[in-house]
Each structure stands twice: as C-alpha cells, then as structure tokens.
Image 1 (tube, rainbow, N blue to C red):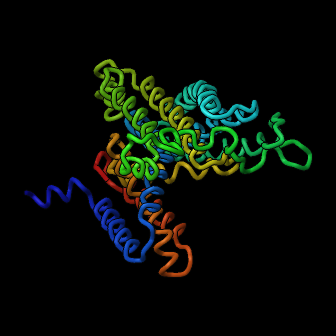
Image 2 (cartoon, rainbow, N blue to C red):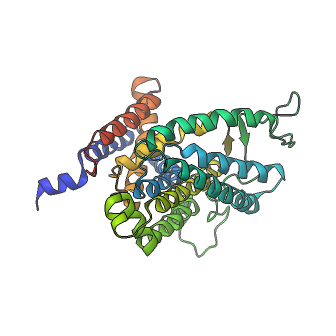
Image 3 (cartoon, rainbow, N blue to C red):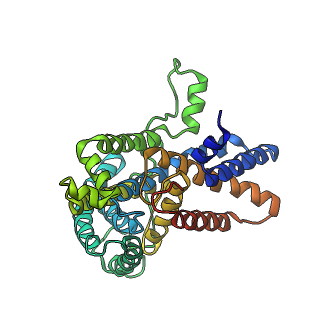
Length: 356
C-alpha cells in the first residue's frame, strides 16, 4: 500500500478537516453531548445544503468555474415558494407548485446569464460575484413593493412589503424531512428502523439522491460528455466541432435550476423563507463545500459534493456544542468563516486543473 499515493488522493485539506471532525466527535462524546441529536443535525444539514452544493457541478464542468452567482437561482426559488404561500397551498402541493414555478424562471434567467458570461470569458467568477450582489440589491427593493397580500407574509403596519423571515410551518415546512416518518409505526417495523428513521431524514436524503443521480446520468450522456470536453479545453472542443458557448450556457442553466430547487428544499427543512440579503450567504458555503470535497476549478464530481457537504456541515454542527461548552461562548461562526475562506483561497491558488 503506497501511503504517499493515498495521501495525494485524499488531499491535505480533506485529511486535516476529517481529522478535526473526528476529534470533535470524540470530544463531544466525552462531554456527554447526546450523539443521536448530533448525528440527526449532521444528516439534516447535509440534506438541506447538498443540492445547493450540487449546483456547482454543472458550472465547473462546463468551464465557467465556481458559480458565485448562485443567488440568481436562489431568488427564483424563493419567488416560487412565495407564490405557493400566497395562494395558501400546503404540504406537497405547495412544494411541487413552488418548484414548478421556479424551474421555468430559472431556465430563462440562466440562459440570459449564460449569454452574458460568454462575452466575458476568463472573468466569470469575479463578474458572477458582483452580479449576485447586484441582483440581491435589486430584489431588496422588489420585496418591498411586490404585490403579495397574504397577511402572514406582509408587514403588519401598512399591509404591504414582505417580511424578512416568513414561517413555512403552515405550508410546506418539513414535507421532505418527515416524508417517511410516522407518529406510530406498524408493529412489523423493527425498533432499530424506527430509531433510524427518527434520526435520519430519509426523505430529504432521497431527494438529493434523485437529483444527484440525474446529474450523474447527464454527465455520462453524449451531451454531458461534450459539455465536460468544452469546459476542460476550449481549443480541443472547437477542433472537434463542439459549440463551446452553447455548452457553457447549458452548464449555467443547470446550475441556476439546481440552485432554485435547492433553496426550496433548504427552506422547507429550515422551516422559514429568508429574503432580502439572505441569498448572498448561499454561494460561499456551497463553494467551500465542493472544494473541500476535492473539486478543482475545472473538475467536479458527485462524490466531491457528498464528501465536501458532509465534512463542512458536520464540522459546523459538532463545533457549536463542543466549543460552547469548552469556551462558554460561541465560535462556530468564526470557524465557518475561517474554513470557507481558507479552503476557497487554497483552491484558487492551485495550478489550473490541479485537484484541490
């Protein structure tokens, strides 16, 4: 067994973060922190964030790089959720209507955004970052004048303008998390399975598995392979008759659609819709997660999404109770900022095409 080869395959960042997460889990158990609750939070946060991280895969594979303009798709996902809430829909109807509204809007927005990115090749991540700030700032005005009339959504004084945080308890809150759970299980269900279903949000994880499988199948298709070729080498792709600009647009459309769906999945699990500046805080954790998982600026796979999301979210979940007990104060936000920015800085300073 070649230790150096294994080390290179795992990568220094993942090795350090995995060791730190393992250390935190051991300390948490030693401090008598309920581990069932810790694992439940890890799996839940994984399911909440995984599709948002998955949205990075098509943009990286198509050669655009990290999609720092994830807020574009997030905003259309929020619009879909808000419209379903405005009409008073509940449960699965609210969830599917929100997605049904968000996806077409995200496709249209992704197409025009992709057209713009084709005009500024080489600066996609920088422009995407500023474009994200711009669209969120514009939507801050829109949320104040949007013609929503549901009293549970608008400000109490004046009856117009959307609140910063809206509860989804009476609409689609927890539909995926509780999909395979029951208040009383049939007698034939063994106790270990009951305990498992109470800890693991199986419906949430299966939803991610479905979308991850769709992206994996697409990446193995003729169109997906062409997109990856276009993203890895524009000159080689052009010489083989592949329309690079077309495939770049396809990549950003897929990324925008996944972001729209991802925020709906996230919100139903979180139990609230967060508006105004909230979409700005989506791209950085998603970028950090996929880079932690082993992706580079030119290469990304589903396994990178799974590993990165688990490590990133697991670290934040376990760090909060452990550090609160040891230091009598919260440092979880500091750790999140250090890890997010540190991993992104590390990945961006690698040689082009080199795995992070």
